[in-house]
Length: 83
Image (cartoon, rainbow, N blue to C red):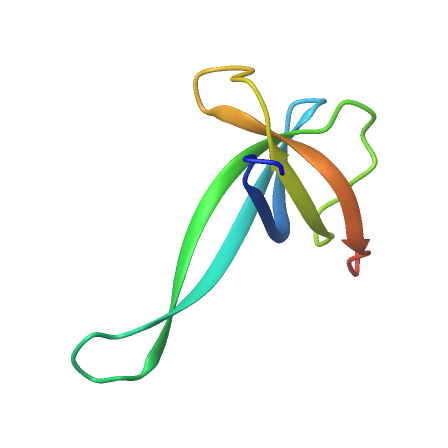
């Protein structure tokens, strides 16, 4: 059993050669209005081989801290984007 978190999101920016900014969307129910609302969070993901581009949907898996804010590495490209 793996205790590492896995997130799926869309690449919105390439920062440097090996870093991607991934926007992860999750849907949560509003406590009062009982309506699903979208919540977004950005993660920095390490891309060693440079396989992902802007607009791609990827999955990332948690790893040791690689920098101050980067603790995920790319697992696979789920879907290629438009660009």
